[in-house]
Image 1 (spheres, rainbow, N blue to C red):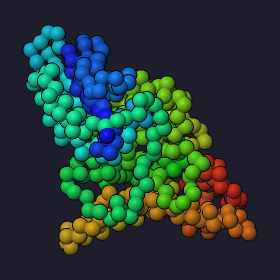
Image 2: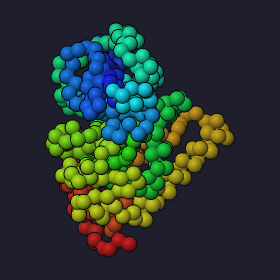
Image 3: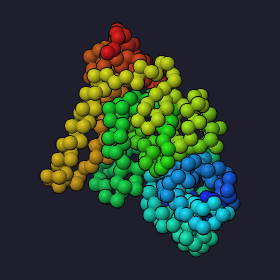
Amino acid sequence: MVNKNIIKHEAKMSVLQTQMQEVRSSIPAVAESELPHRNMVEWCLPQDVNLDGVEFKSMASGSHRITSDFIYFRKGCYFGLACFANMPVESELERGARMKSVGILSPSYTLLYRYMHFLENQVRHQLQCPGQYSPLEAFYEDKKAVLPPTGNGLVNACPTWSVTTINRCMHPEMKITHPAGCMSQFIQFFGEQIMVLWKFALLRKRLLIFSPPPVGVVCYRVYCCCCLANISLPGIGVSVPELRPFFYINIADITALETELSYVACTTEKIFEEKKELYDVYIDNQIVKTHRSHLQPLLRLNAADKEKYRKLTEQRQLLLYSQEVEEDCTANEEDLFILFFMEMNNRIFQTLSEVAGSNDPTLTAEHVRAMGLDPQCDRSFLVDLLEVYGIDVTLVIDNLCCP
C-alpha cells in the first residue's frame, strides 16, 4: 500500500505537490496555494497527512525568475520530488504570474524520477486548468498505500551499490531524469575540486551547496556528493554519522539542521552563508570553502589528488572510446565514477584495518602511498579520518610543509 500527497500553490504562486512511493511503499497526495506573500496547501490526498513546511520545500526561493524547475527535498523521514512551472497570466490577484508545483513523497528518493514526466505534465495542466484534480485523484488511487502516521524519523543515507546495479546499462532517459545519471556532469562541473569534496564527504562533514535557481541540477549535486563516500567493506563506518542527503533546504529547515551531525544539502538562499554554525563546508557554485581552521588544509589540492583525478579522467576517456568504437553498453560513466570512488575508499579502509589488526599498528609512509594518499600533504586528512572512524593506529609520518 502507498500513501500520496499532492500539493498546489495558488495566487501569485500555485503549487500542486504529491507525495508517493512505489507500489510496495507509501504515498500521500497534496495541493497548496501561495497567496501574494505566502505559500499554502491548496489540495491534498490523503487529507490527514502532516505537510507543515512542504509548501516552501516544493518551490525554491527565487523561482519566480524562472519558467520551470524540479526540486528534491526531505520531509521528516520521507523524500519528495516536485515539478515547478511559471506561466504569465492577465490577473492582478496573481500579479501577472501563476506558479504551481506538483510533487510526491516517498521513503526513498531513488525511484522518484519515474514520476518526473507525470509531474511535469500535471503542473502544466494545473497552470492551464486550475482546480481540476481528477488526474491526480486517479494517480492516488492507482498508487496509494499506507504511510506511518508520523513523517518524523531517520532518513537513510545513499543506498549501497550492488554488483547488479553497477553493471546494468542505464537507459538514455534515466541519464536526464534520474540522479544517478548526472555523475559525469558533476565531475565535469567541479573538475579537480571533486577530490576536495571527496575528502569532506568521507569525513562526514556538513556540506551546503549554494546556487541561484534553477535548483534541480543542484539537487543532483547533493546526491553525487553522497556517492563520493560509498564504502562496501562490511563493518566500516557503522559507528560514524551517515552522510544524509537533505536536497533542497530553506530557512524553515534551520531547526532541523541544528541537530544534524552530517549531511549534504543545497539552497538558493544566500543568508545561509552567514549561519556558519549550521555547516562545515560551503560550496558557492564551484568555489569550495570552510570556516573551520583545521579543515582549511584540505582545500589545497596536492600531487596525489591530481594523480587520482588524472586516473579518473583517463578511465572515462577509455570508457567513452569503448562505447563509441565497440558499442559497448555493459558499463556507463555513472557506474565508472561511483566504482572509482568506492574502490578508492575501500582501499583506504582495507589498509587501515589491516594495519590496526597487525602486531605493529603503525601507519607508515608506504602504507599511505599504497592508499593513494600523500604521506605529508594528506596527514591532517588522515588524522581526522582515524578519529572520525575510530581506527586505532599510530601515525608516524613527519608533518612536513606541503607545496
